[in-house]
Length: 335
Image (cartoon, rainbow, N blue to C red; front, top):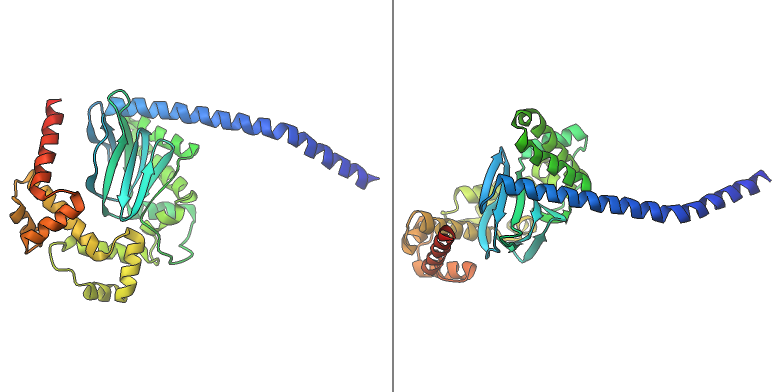
């Protein structure tokens, strides 16, 4: 009899849950949607107040805010390890053949310094693109991993050094509290490290945890690729000898190619080429180098070949590209 009664109680509880759970779930979801919108509105207002004009500004150590009142064409940039959130608008990064688009509902994480293309997709004077970037360092991430007792990676699998994930409400809350510190500078020395640690901890516990661990944890394949990237960056204007690079890393040539591309979406030679062309563009744009001088400065010995390589990456020859960029800067300054 007791067994029968127990079964009846269980059935009654199941019936009760079938009626109450959907309402509770709907209420919880509605509350989260409301919190998200409140957080987003606060981020918009605080970023607009901190950066009222177009540009990127470092507002605290390792924390950058961006404002853009119109969409921008593809820009070639070198991105360092970071965590990025958008308050308003949207943006895309192109890495090799992969496309990473994110918006106020998603965040971007980068775990290796890489050359790539970026483009702001949505922005108007009335609703400008507004975003936050928090730099990540291996030592800081490693310290959070140790405090969290997360241990080491379970495998040596190669992980692409960039991805986009949904921004959950707790992570968004932490970002809002970080931005609020702009109004209380006396609290920054104590509270900023704590909030940044919370953000990194929540990233470690989320979808990008494995990717973030590759920034800090030794023993995975990522540190070898990070060293390869550092060596290429240091001597990007010198001939790249793949056999020598592989020997330094203790890898086979084929293994280096496979693992380097798995992490960066490029071969070592493609990576070097992008660094060279990025630096050549900078020299022509900011230091008034002509195309031939810039080509030699970054390691090209054939100006015609340099012109072809430059056009294949940026879409137009170097001199025309620099003229176009200068005209855009002039229009922005006058507008």
